Length: 421
Image (cartoon, rainbow, N blue to C red; front, top):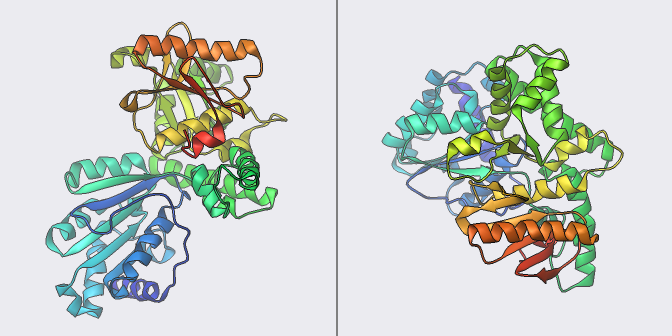
């Protein structure tokens, strides 16, 4: 295995890395282990490559080690073998023991027990460590137990709308009619197809759909079935189809459990909860609670279901036309989730789609508000919430209309997603 590590280390030294920059700032030098987590194919590896390119401009590239633990040449590697990586490197470059080394370990969760190795070299060597992983639970659990106080974690999502436009080389100028035409045109594609980086550069619709289906298979089989030894595959596939077909909807576990029983599935409520937790751990879905003063009250109410990328709805939606209201709301959630951990929906007599306590944000999302009845419903719900929560202003995100109604700012979604509010 040591010889394999030597080969991988030297091959990477010779590799030139072409990347598109993302809007995420990760420090190159800190006193912490840097971990990045997120759904598969969201761009974690290329974020590492961007950091490596920045380092290569300043230091000898032989001071940078990159290992991808999904490389088939490392199949069967155990945690006890990880020390051979460091041995292999210093055998080739013994003088580097006196210099700072940058170590990038990609998809580290593939090696059970990796955290002890990372902790040891962090404590004993002059080294800056970067990790990526595709499981929130795996990384957070092991970091909490073994790397406590030593690590900073960054979440990586598929492209934001602003990143998507930059990848498409669209000039973001809201005062240019030409630029606005391109922005709105690309928004329609982003809304339906999502922001996985590979999808952005693919023009063929059939190939896009195939790529997204392959992503789902990869997540299901690598991150869920293999990791948790799932036996009831038909149940898991039904739940995945249910999740990706129903973004931005209230989820009642009791109702879904009864529906599954009626369809003939053999399961317990614990199994249902577990499968949703596995999907959550793999960063494919998020469950948002109602805002209440106690956790007990929160748990008594249904949670709202969101998915990590609209593209997954694109391949599972069987209706003739997309549900624009749900897709809009899912995009707004993802935009908020990139910045905030705590997001709720609010409900008294009427429901408001999003409440973010950290910045006292109240947001409703409605695809079309041309109808006066629809507009009044959305406005009245926000006014009720503003009064209850003692918040001075709020937002109503919609397709195209822009105006202000009684301290409520109505804004087009593409403008909201570009932070132009």
